[in-house]
Image (cartoon, rainbow, N blue to C red; front, side, top):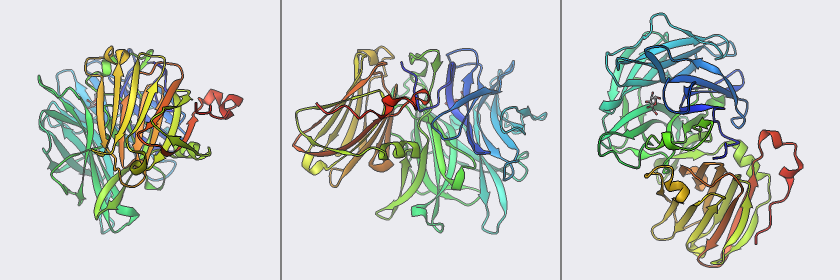
Length: 482
Ligand code: FRU
């Protein structure tokens, strides 16, 4: 499986959840669940990478290493005081060999390279076995008072516990949210993000993010996924505006997503792990295993008076696409073809009322295909991965996922394909669908068919690896459609 070129992967070994995402001293830092000794889950520690642009990542030494009897599970980092000299404070879950899980603290004075663990660890302990994934956020009262809020799950109880602190050391339990939604899952990696609807400061809603993983003998074979619920947070308790959890990403491989602390302009930027606990250990990549998604910026817009979550791709993606002149093609039942490098961005827009059904087909040198089909009735985009190379990964790896995509009005898709990572943004991020794909390691052919003859506008571009930026190859025009 080819290594992604514009996503974070570890040089070697196993990676899962993003941890401690923080923007500090002009750089984006991602810590992550990491096995420093092998390509299977275990010896959990925090790996570390940083980036100036969220596209090119530099891997740094392991930040927090497991110790005999204690693994370092997921958690978060905050900049404890504003400015360049602020200390970084990390909270992570100490997963002890006796099964107990409790929250521990570490500080860094050198921008996250080295960490000192607190002598009083674990500093927050309920004596339970599934208390994990602390996420620290900031809360400003109406009267100007400021507090740190910690969210952590009691995973088996499907609950998020809220705590507050003024010194980032001692925590008071405020409230508990849940359980709601499907049973037969554990809740993991919560986050709570304030977003101003349509950018209006007087209409801030709070979006609770959750990752849910099916457990038990009859566990759902679709495996782990992310959900969200929109609500209000008054500094003490979260109140959901609906009794349902909504799916955050409709694909199979988007998990444990959380936001960066201190992102410029207060932007809500999340990264997620692009895999699924159902088969993560079977994904055939070597010598690394695990990749992060593209960073996404979250916002809320109002649609028919209701807040709706939007997940936008990063600017390096939209700017690269905007740098090429779109081509208008005549879609027809006769397939049109294009060769992509396999590390590529494709932006498509069309009018479903005139094209009818639209079908995209991706195939590389592996014995597998990816198909994206938009049907007018039902108004769904279905993404299917299938084939011998797909079935070889795991019996539950072949998949079809559907995303709502209206058929009245213009439709737009942005496909980001980076080796095994396919992320689809529907209508500017109003829905997303992220999946690992098995297209092999060479170039990938993309074919397009529409039911009726009608124009389809397309921009397609290969995204070069850092080493190739200066190469004249990257400026060659796209191969013509055949
Ligand atoms: C989520 C998770 C977390 C835990 C970590 C362990 O994927 O199960 O709940 O902290 O992974 O690696």
